[in-house]
Structure formats: C-alpha cells, structure tokens
Amino acid sequence: MMEFVDTHTHLNDGKFDEDRAEAVARAKAAGVSRIINFGDTMQSSEAVVRLAEEYAGLFAGVGIHPEEACEMTAEDDARLAAWAAKPQVVAIGEIGLDYYWEKDAEKRLLQQRVFVRQLDLARQLHLPVCIHDREAHGDTLAILKKEARGMTGVLHCFSGSWEMAQEVLRMGWYLGVDGPLTYKNAAKLPEIVQKIPLDRLLLETDAPYLAPVPKRGKRNEPAYVVHVAEKVAELRNVPLGEIAAATTQNAMRLYRIK
Image 1 (cartoon, helix red, strand yellow):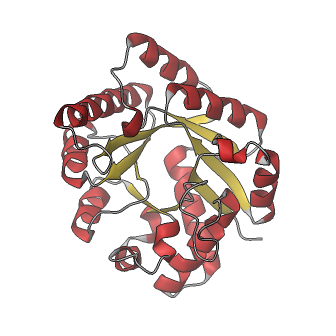
Image 2 (cartoon, rainbow, N blue to C red; image 1 turned 60 degrees about the horizontal axis):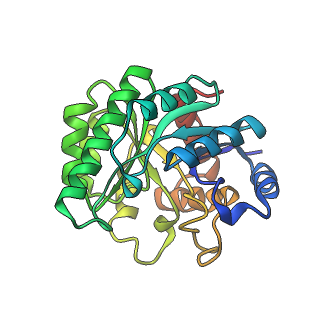
C-alpha cells in the first residue's frame, strides 16, 4: 500500500471533538501513516503534545502563530523547550508572519519579534521550523535569511512566487502544498509545483481548513492529503506512488521521524 504523511494539520481543533479518533483511523485506512499536528498558541501546543502521546503515528509541533502573537516571556520559552524535549515533538511551529489579517504597523512588528524569538529557540533546540507566511513574503524571507542561517524547515501552504521558491530552495528548505493546489484559482502554484525538486516537496492538509477538491467546502481531515498528492502526480505527470514515496521520505528527513 502507498504511504503518505500529512505534514501539517490541526487535529486539536474543536471541529474534531466529535470524531477525532475516527479521523485518525480514516487517515490510516487511506495510507496516511504519520501525521504532524501543529499548535498555534501555548494552549493548543499543550493539546497537540497530549494528542501525540495518545495516538500512534501522531507527532507535534509547538509554537505561537502570528495571528496569536503576544509578547513572549521566559516562562513561555521554558514551556516550549520542555515540550520540545519530548520524543513526539518534532518542530517549532506554526510560526511566522500574517499581514493578510494584520494591517497595524506596530502589531506587525510584534509578529516579527515573536517570529525571531521562536526561530532563536528552534536554533537552540536543534529543531526544524514550520513557517506561516501570508501576504508577508518580503519580510518572511528577509527574516529567514538573517535569523535562520544553518537551520531548516518548511514554508507551509506555500503561496509565494517562483522567485521566492528558488530562494527558499537555495537555503535547503522545503515547500508545503495543500488543498489550494487543487482549486481552479490556484494561479501560479501549479506551475511552481511542476518545477520544485521532488526531494523538497511536502504534502499537507491544514485540516480542518482548505479541503481539497473533491472535498472542497467540507471539513478537511488528514485522509484527504491523498487528493493533494494526486494533483501533484497529475501536474508532474508521474505515478502517484512516486509522489507518495518521495514526499514521505522528505517528511521523515526534515522531521527526523521513523
């Protein structure tokens, strides 16, 4: 059976409260052998760590999302570091910048401070990072080039240009693709996915958000990562098994999971 990894999901979200165990079981039945579940606040980070301890094949990333940015304390650093010491915690994330929702200049600066602080923490902990970048491409890239030298990670749900993709690839980083790749308004993303070296591509759902075609409009879940893989295979004109094998290897390499 083909094996897939959903490298970005939010199974701790309340939309899974009624059928979380069933969603994990459906993923396994679809060939999704590993799932990486990301926190976006201190509270949700604690929840993803707990879920990773509860379900086999579930791993966790801990961090503060830019939409939730607030001045971090030494206690926050210590809590993130303590969670990161657990074997199921494989990344710092989801961290980054979001200028789509945030227009206030001071609050954007706060996002940048929180982003840089968590990059520094990831460096100290020797962990990869998962980056959220929404309409903040220039600042995201500038911060990564300055503050993340020698580190590794992924630009989750990549929405930048091919030129930006090339910069990220030159850094040795990965690009994550999700449901929007399957949408009619995918714009430049399909062309970028055709060009990305296959050893730098990761599959994601971002569940419960961004369900891919043919599930668009429904709650997304990790099992649906297979639809993203099918679209990648179609765009690159290669067998689905090739995409499954390569992206699974990539996920295991980046997050050092077996």
